[in-house]
Amino acid sequence: MLTALAQLMVVLDGSIITIALPRAQADLHMSDSQSQWVITAYALSFGTLLLLGGRIADYWGRRRTFLAGMLGFGIASAYGGLVQTGIELIIARGLQGAFAALMAPAALAILTTTFPSGRDRDIAFTIFGAISGAGTGIGLLLGGTLTEFLSWRWCLLVNVPIMIGVFVATLAIITEGRAEGRHRYDLIGTAFVCFGLGSIVYGLTQTEPGKHIGLGVFLLIVGALLLAAFVISQRNVRDPLLPLRIITDPVRGGALILQLIAGCLTIGTMLYLTRHLQQVLHLAPLAAGIATLPMTLATGIVSPLCTIALTRVGPRRMLIIGPAVSGVAMLWLSRITPDGSYWVQVLPPLVLLGAAMAMVFVPVQNLALLGVSPADSGAASAANTATTQIGGSIGLSVYTALYTSFAGAHPDPAHMVMGFQAVFVATAVTLFIGAFVAYTMITDPRYRRHREFGAKHVS
Image (tube, rainbow, N blue to C red; front, top):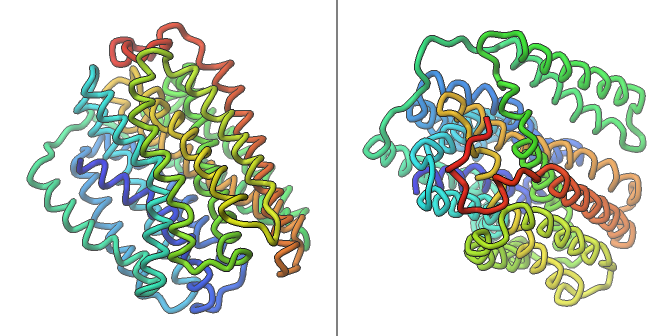
């Protein structure tokens, strides 16, 4: 339960500020470009530092890393709630992501080593996966409530009391665990992956109309080269940041790609959905948060059913059907119009999307960590979570460029809806690619029945 609460706090903070962003932007006099970085700074620092955080959890101790991450996350949240400028808010969000990179892999590693196999593991990962899936929706609802009745600042300050409670409980309940032996941290690999992904994300922001496209292309090339250098370095270093054995298994690799695509949806796409609700349909922050609740409820209702169905159909079929149906839902959502109704154009595809994504959230995290040795549990957990955040960072950058291309600089609803439609269609295409990935990569017969989870090893 403690690890689930920590995961909720981490996932929730990826979305809670989204619905409060228009008011924060006005209050702190931020430009549109700055406001995008309020979300990107969190996801990017989180995603790029997760691998180092996973290794710190393995070597320094999972409980100790979990506590340090929570403490820093709470302090960064308090700072973010008190900032006076947009730059300060971006810095606070980056610090939140950095400390979340300590907390999240430690939490998942604790869960992995506590429940190594059997039905208890299935139940634990079902709860963990459901929280990961529902966290975005809960964040939007809570963000709308806090923004409307208190202030957008409470979207950050709310983390402080939660952190204090979980911190005290962790001291009393969770015992320490770490990998045996003497190890070194791969700081060169950390630099490669941080600057590589940072260059790619920033380069994508420069491909928007009116920006420095030449600089954007240059940064994309530099980022790709740095990531290639990272992969090469992991083959030669004694204690790699990401042992390649973790990602070279095709099933686990397919699961991580699906996590990447889920991040595009939950982080990248939801920003534009909430903008449509507030700026086109003119819903207040609380009403906009409530308007996204049916998706969260659908995920919560379908998740237990997916757990039962896994014993019959296995994860492969669910990971094909889930993204495919989610893609259909996004195509449906792309049919919005400036004068359309929420009840007709938004609600039905949202419910379908929430139900379909439950078929992804429930099995994918279990599948991504199945068979990982205890010594690699922190690194594997970090890779699992990092793909979601990195997918969100890249997705948000791509979608922002796409939105700007179609909407231009026009603030009227007709042009904004054209941009939203383009984003939703792109998301649908991404989800269909995810279904194809599951069809081609989740093929090992050892994974065809959920009852085999925990009994087989793929490393």
